[in-house]
Amino acid sequence: MYGWEMLSFNIHDGFLEAIVRGNRSGLLTSADYNNLCQCENLDDIKMHLTATEYGPYLQNGEIPALLVIGYLSRAGATVIHYAARSAAVRASLLAIRPVQIAITDWGFREPSPLHTTTIVEKCTLKLVDEYKHMMCQATEPLSTFLQYITYGHMIDNVVLIVTGTLHERDVNELLEKCHPLGMFDSIASLAVAQNMRELYRLVLVDTPLAPYFSECITSEDLDDMNIEIMRNTLYKAYLEDFYKFCQKLGGATAEIMCDLLSFEADRRAVNITINSIGTELTRDDRRKLYSNFGLLYPYGHEELAVCEDVDQVRGVMEKYPPYQAIFSKISYGESQMLDKAFYEEEVKRLCLSFEQQFHYAVFFAYIRLREQEIRNLMWISECVAQNQKNRVHDSVVHLF
Image 1 (cartoon, one colour):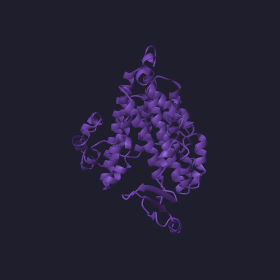
Image 2 (cartoon, rainbow, N blue to C red):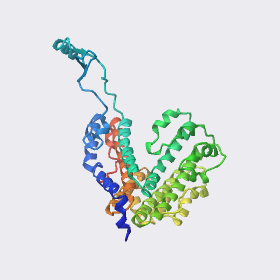
Image 3 (cartoon, one colour):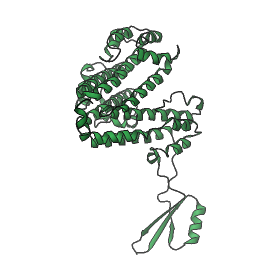
Image 4 (cartoon, one colour):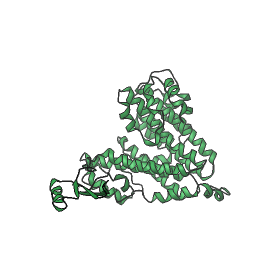
């Protein structure tokens, strides 16, 4: 922030900013990733993560070989219950204290097999807990700013439920796959909607996403193409709304957040263009899905809308110096590495936001960095679980 605004920032938001800057030191480093990439199995990954801030979340409640529980019985005598793994241990216990000791399996359970989804869920739980702590401590306008961060997850959850229902997937199974930060009360009711108008009227009218549906409401049936158009239209409206909100906040928050959101808008424009090549989406339809801000707006959007292959997209992006550096890292025909290049650029910009003080962008940056960290852990875990260690470094984006 600038001028007198610096004098008042710490009154309401200084404590939370200090918490977030402190939490940043708990993010995994390059040394951590190098160690994780050398793990032989998921248990090794878990063992390494237990030495980090994820440790408390990865404890699965396993009970050791011998569990001793003492309590007073109704008769007043002390009764000791043992839970032991093997019959041999049980027999030895009975031989030692045959009168006072009762052997029981109460409380004992074998550890469940470790899966990649388990690691990701536990790490996501830490992110959710940190977000909830910030929300509990935040006052306006920071609380509204933090709510905006979750709207993207809400959109993803809506699309996940609607797409899954279209393919006759079980609703409870779909709800388990939803991101916790994007949950809302009526999300399970999304399964009953047959078109976008019903989707809005029955479910979304009472959610924060309601204002973004004004451009989506049609009577067309929901199919894969319409759902994807709905996703991108919602994201466009959401990013534009978030951008305007940050502009109203002013100061360093507006300066840094508008840059971060512009980068996000440009990245989505590139992805929309590449993913729509060879589809039924017309040039005008493609142009309508681009956000009305960003470095590419408006002239870059006009050029992207007419691109017919990835090389033409590269030609457009190389006219803009910040993106020329990104595409220079990618050889022709390697468009699959584009996502990683964009993630690396995003991480660099997010880390730079911590170099200034008295602004809200650090909250946005921290949550995004945590999400990137979870993506890294998911990739490493999947490669280790599938015995694809030769690819373990391919999609890992180092934060520091």
